[in-house]
Image (tube, rainbow, N blue to C red):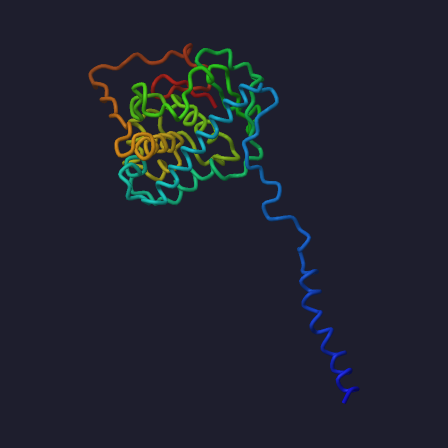
Length: 275
């Protein structure tokens, strides 16, 4: 009997040990985590001094706050929200959610904010910054004008600001939403400018929602509008009303080529946008 028990134990013991050994040697167990190497904060170049860095970081946090709340608003109300329908019509909400979430959670590698004016454009009047375009597609320059003219979210819906009637770059957060969508790492070349003025945005949402959901201006206006209505002044907001359409019997003088640098165009409120 004793010999039988010893023989049985000799057979059973390796069977019990095998699963533990297997757990320690399954394929890929030494690989890094799936998200290893992801960049979770927007990088800022060493050319920015301490004050510039703090202001850019604060502006970026405002942009993330705006985008994240707009995303949560859509997750809560889908495309039934009256504010959503104003900008995106009856379009399914998934693309809007994804485009907003890219600001918050996309990998921020291959993005860079800098302050050293490598292309010389900060010397141009009214330039608060610019995407570097073909010079460096992942880089954005922030010019000194931004630090003295942009407001933070604590001032939202104050000083006579309205979503419909004030420039998009009134707030650092909305201005940086615009700049972030230019970067391929965030906008992926999919989010573009399909509208110019606020009235154009409403027209796009009413008649071409498939483009509205990836229109840079529509996404910015929507984020501003829901932040005002939900957070800044709950239940009231500061949407404002669109400007009346100009009379068809007279046209304002066109912008001269001397007023707008080559390759650039103007936005509502006289804001100059350059790629």
